[in-house]
Image (tube, rainbow, N blue to C red):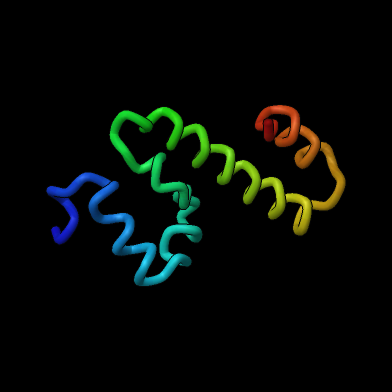
Length: 79
């Protein structure tokens, strides 16, 4: 409950300082401007793209060049 009453812009810098991997492993964007409440939509967009990139990399590594990996690239393009 240490962070439950705080805004992301207040607690994420502490987590980032402690260990960046705690955020990157969860695909949390590291851009502090996206941690503000008024940037929530942009935060979600960036996080979605990071998750898609991570999934696409995993599919390419473990799935090879097959129908599934091509479909993921079509549905979740990186701008």
